[in-house]
Length: 334
Image (cartoon, rainbow, N blue to C red; front, top):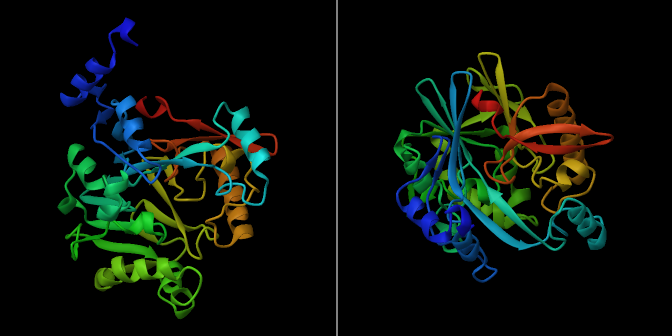
């Protein structure tokens, strides 16, 4: 690296100066730590140019991807391929030039600027994640020129903690001028007695703390409902009882925000039938995964996946009876 002048010292100087690459990437350096002692801090130190946000356009809509944080750890088995043995999952990772027993999870909310509307899709970990290197959403939004008070609508694809915990901080809404939109099936499940008294009661408590206080301004969506013209909810049940995807269309261009349907860029695509530990209805999640993969491959449209490697943006390529993730490079710049 030092031979071409981009050594660690030069990279840190560039980051401190707010270095950008062609106006597309913006970087911020911050120490991040996780439960695996020092792992995220080391990752940040070794990769000081890792971007915190990326911006592109779909028709007339400005789309900004924000990296709320990363989480390195053991895996992907048994989180991915829970119904498989660890050796087979590790072999698949090795075939894709990745470690057999270690992986990194990413957390990427999306901001859509549609006319006068500023729509935030999912909110990351919030204050509760900052000690572990997550919860960077609002800081990185500000670096991208978007303030929390600018947000007019918050879309929650589903109500797991890593999507809702950024809603409230110190007892007050973080996005004070925004109303909340989420799926009716999803919200009614997490506020039900079955959820509060069942095996996912901890998540139901998080919903009660983070989402229910915002209920007065909330709008609940059915499959096919529009958030605003051009942004449509699509049922994607399985990961949770009522998870929604969101389809954006502007000037004949489209983008599918797939939430947690496709969460691991090897396993979810190459082995879509393998079970995922956090999918609440495993078989429904498999059916949703296959349906979404087939549609994306056939229609060739770009998509985002909340947990895919940042900027969590790419395309799906059919490969026999399975698929392959193709990261976005420059097609959306043309």
